[in-house]
Image 1 (cartoon, rainbow, N blue to C red):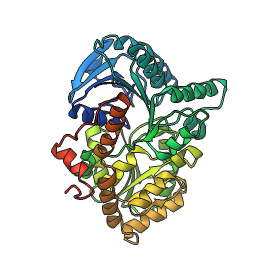
Image 2 (tube, one colour; image 1 turned 180 degrees about the horizontal axis):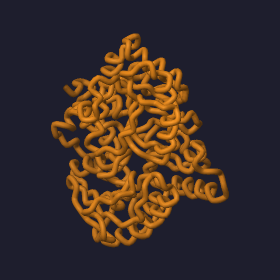
Image 3 (spheres, rainbow, N blue to C red; image 1 turned 135 degrees about the horizontal axis):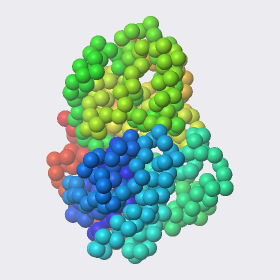
Image 4 (spheres, rainbow, N blue to C red; image 1 turned 180 degrees about the vertical axis):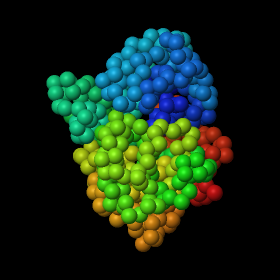
Length: 428
């Protein structure tokens, strides 16, 4: 079976696209051919690595996956307008690049966001007479409406109609949360088949060590409250800054932001206005070092705005947080993410309330809440339920059913054996 994956973003870029990379490697390990149609790396800082510069197309092989990269107008997360232009250029250059694929294709798998890839994936599936599977990692434009960075207009309502039309025309829709699955099933004329394949975590988050992060940044004696990810509009990062303001009398408590995004400058100005010395921004870090930052922390924070779309959302990083074995404080209202942490052990929530966040941090620091126990429970639960290879096997079964071939036998590498048998024997 030959699977063509359409994803504008792909490693070495950071973020949720690591999911599709791990799944692609898993499909290859189980005897299938995978080609990825993507852009030259540039997310989230807008900087294209030297080896990819100056070429319209670039081809490479990564862990057995053929990767066809196309030129786009590179743009930082800080410039959403330029990013939208880049998405339009990808539609054109990737379509041209697809002509270099001479072999037949059995299935086109397009992953969204951004919203250009479902359109491109649908066109390619018709051109190639292949089955079409759409993976929905976020609901657009609905999520942007709820988070306030897109207004409802004639254009965005038209965009919603286009997306819903593509949902209906897909042979199968895969979402990352049960909430998204329910939303799509409740649409008028919903697609025939919709399934949930959660993101899970890849093994490096389970196996990582702190590896000198504290020494490098001068944090040896600090109690680290850490957020890792995009500093964007979907998050309520000001809650962390308000909590830091509350805890200025705790000089060993340090709030750390690992990552970059549209709101970084605004957040730094807020810290400066409050004259806070207990908040640090370390910017974008190498992808391979993120598990080490999580291990270096004492507490991990995920903050989402309390809007309707959030209730059906589980941030991909939540699984990685759990695998790292650290206590997690979740900033959002009731919903699927909260239920996940409750299932793992206990949900500690602050829901956009900086004072509440500060109180929980103090209780963890003093031992009133047993953070070590919580971290162990999260880690065990993640290993038993959310190792990425568990979800990859389910994904592969969907694809094989759609294409009409018998299910593969699981390739028994040391990693996949651990993942498949994890309910009986957690990873050591």
